[in-house]
Length: 386
Image (cartoon, rainbow, N blue to C red; front, side):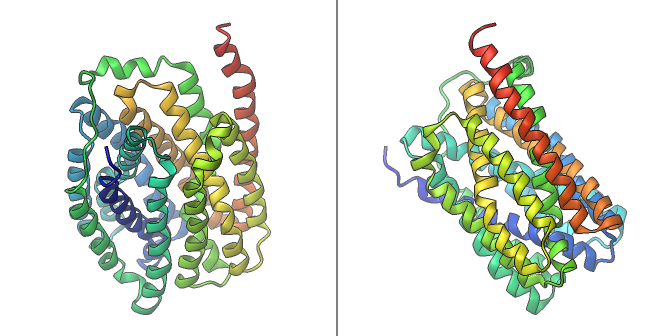
């Protein structure tokens, strides 16, 4: 089996994460342009995680049941393009919230399905998962830099045009993907229920919320924080570019460092670095300091994501890989996203960005301690069959 079939997969991850950049980096600024307050921006951003909680397991189960990732991706990308066109036409808060729910229902599972496909193909071809996933980070980085300068010149109100451009390209590339090969029988609902009796899996998902909500709060409000400190749309794009380039480097080099220790060691390390990162953010006095600190994104998110993704792959059967990973996404981008968006919006509105980052630093530190206890006590007790 050759590595040639990986080219469409890499290009798909590149183009999808390029579209995702536009939403994550600039949607808060777009909503602010529409006249929404910071708290209302938080409500809209919380719709995405709420839809994620429902959408991720739903699409993951269909993928495992019908033993296809490619067809589910084609449905989701097509739905994303239609729903985004509707979403960007809305001006009233209620209409924005409703159309956002539809948009996120189709768009949020795409990243998890694409990464799940990448992980399976990496296993089949015996190549590092990070070497494939890094193309998503490159797409994110290129888009964040280029779109930032474009929107600074044409106006944030026109962000739908670059979004649709990358989205249509993602749909085209999705038709060229090589589907995953699954030899087991299609899963049934009772198979999925078994996952929820896996206590280490459930405990892990609960504990990582403490880290994930800090990441999601930053995703939602770092753009507004940069503007609060006197920055522009182009500086927001530059900040994301710096962050995601560091992420891409960590993913690309994963083959050299990742297998040396148990994945939980890297999860705990990432948690400790998250705590330090947010404290530095809280002390920022200018947008340029935030941009410089974004270089820590690679050693926090990329390390955490690779380790958590691998740890979950070890805990669930291969026949349930898509479901297991998409439930993880439901926690990362769903539950944690709701808490991060609503809490972050309220704190940002009342006290400003400095206080927000002080608070999430505390959450990250708490999560790191709890995950350390989990690894050293609960996990080891299970390993010894106590």
